[in-house]
Image (cartoon, rainbow, N blue to C red):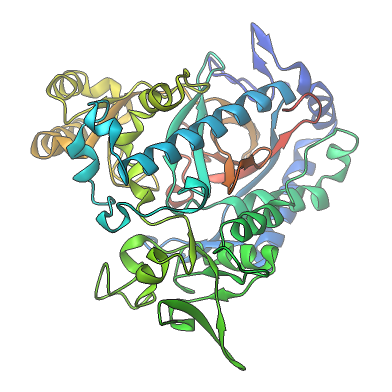
Length: 478
């Protein structure tokens, strides 16, 4: 790694010139003792094993490879105990604020009445569900499973890039990546003191039991999947296995007298808590999309009557809208009288005339994102866009400004990555996962996604990104 050069970016393994990463010294020493061919061999072994184990995701837009592994890089991303304590507090604060916001907008709507957030931004949002108005949910928790996308800028400051409060995915790779590193790199991990990640399934099951209807001694939990053609189907199988609960599809469930039952070989069995990996629109054809063949007719009414718990709650999509994201710091101040522990990336909402004009005037220097898209689709990165791409973006902004936000280009931190000919810096982000029932717990670390294409800032798996194991070091964590 003697020729390795991260340039001006903050490096997750080495730190910065004025902020060296002392906590990674032993790991760097061990990596330096391995030659590149050995790293390549172990990396190839890891990828071959991932494929053999069926640890895959589906890319519908790729005609050449529908089912593929998430590329895995064997050089870990390392987080010190004090850094993690800070991130853990910040993620918990954010989950708490978003749950307060969701309870408020479906009850008294104080934040809308006080003009902190524009009413039409919430009630006009396609994820706002009027059916949830006045409905109480256990512990006032709407987002039981949340993935918070974090980036680190060139100064080493972590920032929130976006919230994922509907059906966040990727946690299976966190656990499987760790298992892979334990098999492929036991010598690198020895005596380092890394916080474990293999209790995620137990924590998730505990939360699902906590939110079950009152008076049920032994709640039946199930995981509801859209089926084998879903891009995250591997993860659905993985999580059902980790929790020790049945994996079901809509056709396996039935509602009778406003109660949910699972079809079994012994007849109908009651179901009390459902971890759903299915969007609102497809959940109940009687209430939402009548053409849906994936959901369970009548489940909304069973939910409204408190006979079944759903995680995440219906209507949480308002909270992970990219325009609503801009207001989360104000939510934290409004509901909790606190400043954000982890700041947002500076963001302009193009539905506001001044913000739109600023965006149009500085298009070549900004990142423009559609509000409703996910997976890295529809993003225009100004400094890396062609003239034609910038003009196309300008036309879309003028045609529908409320569908876009703009942000400065964040110089994402980098991490050493095994490439074809050498170890090179590649940009990374981080998605910690929080589970909330009565209280919140954050999985130590999270999914570190890596942009494997040289120079690109887009880390999404659907756009060619891969992942790394994320090591949170023990000691001093809250």
